[in-house]
Length: 314
Image: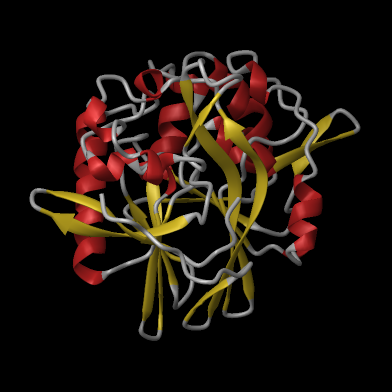
C-alpha cells in the first residue's frame, strides 16, 4: 500500500455549484472484531495495512493486549444544491428502542445541534435521502414529541427505494439477517412518514435536481442506492453502505455481515470502484470516519486507496 498524504483540510468541500459538509452523530468502535464485521475476510486485507486503517478505521479497545475492533462513523452528508438542502442518510436517532443493538438504543445525542452548527434548520430541509432502510440510516427521520414519533424534517420529501420499502414492510414477513428488530425500525422511523404523506418511493434512478441523481446499487439491501453528484466538470459519488472499511478496497470481495446478498454486494462494489478508478471520482461512504471521502486506483486485478478528500478528519 502506497503512503497516502491528505491535503490541507476544511469543513466543507465544493463540487461545481454543490457544497458538501457533514454532521456527525457519533464515531468510535462498534465492538466487533474485523472477522465478525466481515465474515470470511481475507486476513491480508487487514494485516500489514496499519497505516491505512489506524486510527480512523481500526482501534484497540482497552489496553494494547486487547483485540482490535472496527471503528465506524454515524453521520449525515449535507448537500446544498440549486438553493435546496439535501441530507443523505439520517443516522441512528434519539430515543429509539433498539433491543437488538443495545448501543443504539435510547440514545441522547446532540445531532440536531450539530446540524444547526452546519447551518441546517429542520424546517428548511428539502430532501432526506435514505440510501437504504437500515436502522442507522433512518433514525433521525423522526423524533419523539410528547410520546409520538413526528417527522424531524416536516417539509422535506423523504426519498426511499421502492425495493427496500417492499422488503422491510412487516406485512411482507420477509426473512432478513437483521431479524425482527427491523419491525420496530419501520414503526418508529418509516410508518410515521408514510402516514404524513412525506415519502417519495423510487426505483432504478431518481433525479433530484440538475446536479443530483439517485441510482440503484443493490446487495447490501435489495434497494440499496448511491447518489451521483455531477455539477459542471465536477463529479462525486455518495456510496452509502457499499463499503464500510478501506479493507474492502484492498479486497473488493470483503463483504460485511449486514449484506443481504453477498454476491450482489460484491458485484456492486467492484462496479463502483472500477468506474471511480477510471474517472478518478471521489467516493463518500456512509460510515467512513477520518476524512470521509477517498479516491481509488486500479492495481492489477484489484484496487487501492489513492488519496483522501481534504475534509476535516473525525
